[in-house]
Length: 356
Image 1 (cartoon, one colour):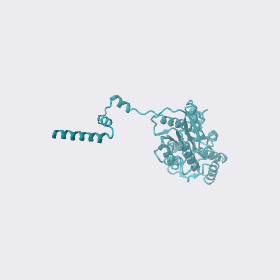
Image 2: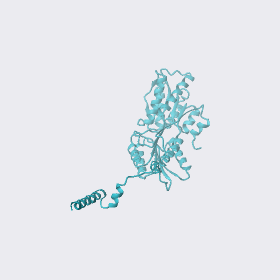
Image 3: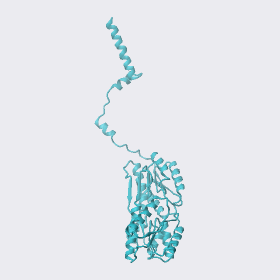
Image 4: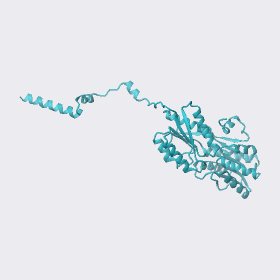
């Protein structure tokens, strides 16, 4: 009798154990109790990177520039559009941007609207290092790769940053200017140099102005740097500023402009005041007015980037990221110092007249 009772108690205990482990199904409890086994082939397969799903339509990329009134930024768009044209329909590029580089709020709105339309990727040359950060971070968090061109943002939440070392590039103009003073028999000691800037709030413009000024002062310690003139990216204002500087400073021997609009204004003033040769002038970026000014001598030279290449590579980097490929986080683009001596060199002509 005792043996029978004991057997019944064991049966009840086992039944309770199975119910506790497996819920309502005894089959599930049996499967859960089995040890998991994975073959080497299955393990290797699980370690492979997940390939992005094939896209049914073209990749839609939005390219946002700093200003539509600048030939430099239009060249960035040409490069982006060339990347799309070469893709055989794989890439579709939409372009946008504020009218002027002073339109920070307008650019932020353009970016926010672009994100709302859910593009596959974005390329942006941001006017401000701060203002577009929230929207860029929002886009990246939503899985939209963002390549920033030219101006570096105050965040690491971007897919790639493609830009010139603006400080170092501007210093090459300063080095060349000092060299040319000596060649022209101009003693820079005790003389004056001016910097004409488009925008006090742009990190890019600040880096260019500082790179030029620091190198000039390093090479000619007793030279006088006139207080930087800010001209709201306006050619006429730049020209007026230089007119006033020339009138007030008979010992002015050098001027630097931090973009092509400032270069245009500087060149116009030097030509009208007949100061070609006595005042050496360099600017950043290129346009037709600056190129003609180099030929006439109103401008001594310009620091030329590769805006066409930046637009092209920016789009290609977005596509590479979308396809799961590794993309370098920060890329430094090369620059070329263009003067009358190398203006007609084929490689330089390609930079000055991209896409032609």
